Length: 158
Image (cartoon, rainbow, N blue to C red; front, top):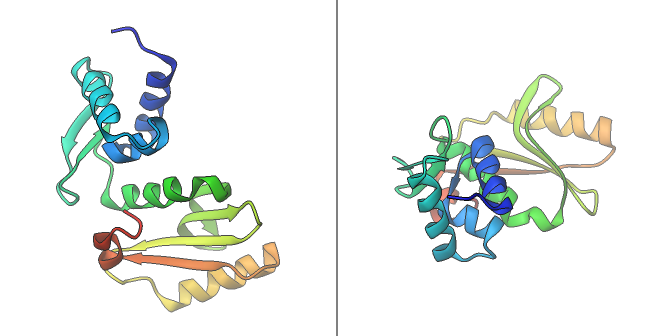
């Protein structure tokens, strides 16, 4: 199989993040699930990537080294769905002494903090500290987006 430039981009993306068929379709195939599925199967068959049914999502997920977590795939979904309005995107950003799942700055300079909280364990202390940190450093009030398991099952983020 001769790799095309897009194949290399897909392999690199999958190596870094892992992805579902739909995520790759949205990023590289103008939303075409069938085209994405066909190419991913070929890349898997030729051993450039691995694919397996995700135990939580019950969807096929592609990866290079290890299966991405449900958590990681949910964060990527938020990024992919909003990539046209995102200026800066940082996964696992340290804000003061707290790690947030993602720090997003939109093209309109709005700050969004993303937390995927599958089991509703994010403490108010963390949220308050992160808000204060962003306000003191970036001089704006951040929008805090906390996705829980119910949101993810409804499709609001994953």
